Length: 509
Image: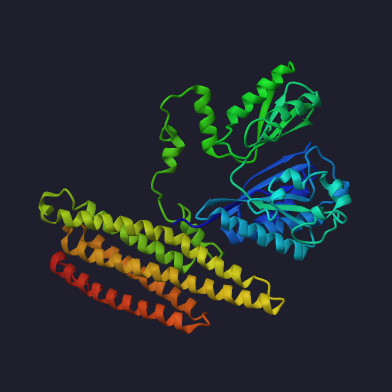
């Protein structure tokens, strides 16, 4: 299982003051996430930032971005062509890998409660996170924009926020939710007639009877009429279908398309599908894309080729637990090497069946231990996030302590799993040394040494996390399992040394 990754794409009501945008992005990156993209449009006066990371870091980054925007953006002084109700206008969370929509819903709701409580901002939940059916669609919440909401929020019950005060300050309100990937796509018409853009937008958007999963508005941007679209499900309506619909409607008004614009990021599948349709590529397969083939090549090392740089950095993760998994994965790789250099050799035909099985198991363990590199880092980050939970009231402190206990136990279970897999690597190494190609006997011994190092390192991480548990019963069970593994590893090491002396003809003294 891959480490969980969440994408967040907050929209901020500022693009004309670069220093403000930079301050917001800096606040976001301070939480340890990776910013994939930012897009600023001065006519819209809006910036879209796309960042990704583990759930806890992404949630914290979103909070820091919202807080900084509330400090620096005054909606009473804001103008722009794009609808908005807040300094941070909308904050969607999108599940990417190792996490589901339900998890993103919890993130959105938890963040909404925190922002309402700590920053005193009105918060509305939308899309999959909505608590009220009429708030699923963003346009319903944003009706009347900032000015309209400011006039109604205190007197109209239906405009009461889900969290935070029912009043609007200069930072406005923020909409937070969870959704599937969305494509923001703008089509510029070869005209400066805003009425044409509005007519085309009305014709193509779903709410007016147009294309499914298409939201569209007509605007005037950079002196051109623009049809601004959100494709909420590109598998229902593709980019190509949306562009052709706009082209057809614009032609009815005697104008053509000047150019198109992508806002933020787009799934590769959406662009590939568009290219296939335009080029009429029958029988096309994704494997024909060069980058797809390159992406699917085996990785050169756990956590990417920069693992050792990451390990040496002044950051708490990756640390010893990840290094243990890395060492175990290298041990499994060496076992696989011995097996491959034995299979097919005439001299070793009698053990070929056994070596094939050893190879199969070694590759499975290599894959599992490689994934454990990131799993260990993620487990430690969960512990750190638990310690940051609020503790202002007895109820909050109880939840915080329970979360810390659960996260700490998990942080011990991950390296214990690495220890278990490392002993399995040692068992395979024992067989490889005893049966494999004699020319690779030192490689088999090295595999066992790497696995033993992994076990030792993982054991340190199990023990330090168990020391932090309040419930020692659960810890004693894990510690007993670790002792058993260490005893088994000791016996395997003695057996491997014996085989080396018998087959290799060199001393280990």
